[in-house]
Length: 94
Image 1 (cartoon, rainbow, N blue to C red):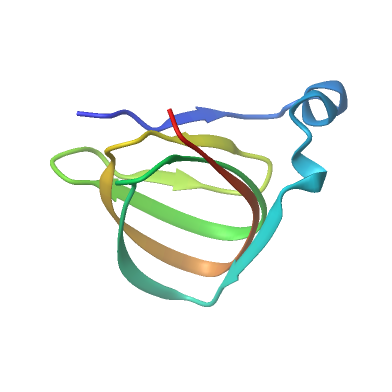
Image 2: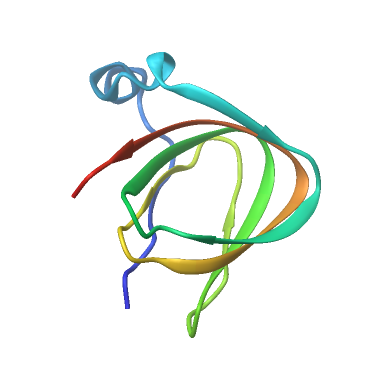
């Protein structure tokens, strides 16, 4: 099963190295929906809010501001936005 990778408390240097400030911004109100990473992996950096991502057959992961996440190609999951979400993101073919 593909694993969600979370890094916390990235340094300013690491944020700059990744180029996160140039990534797209996505916002979402409180809601729950299914999201499958069938075409590409996603890298995200949480700016505001909170989201709980539950992989099929796996353990829920709670994501909060300052978290840098890699959602791997092939991940099948349910996303529950518990506080209005704002994040940077980019998609990459693996």
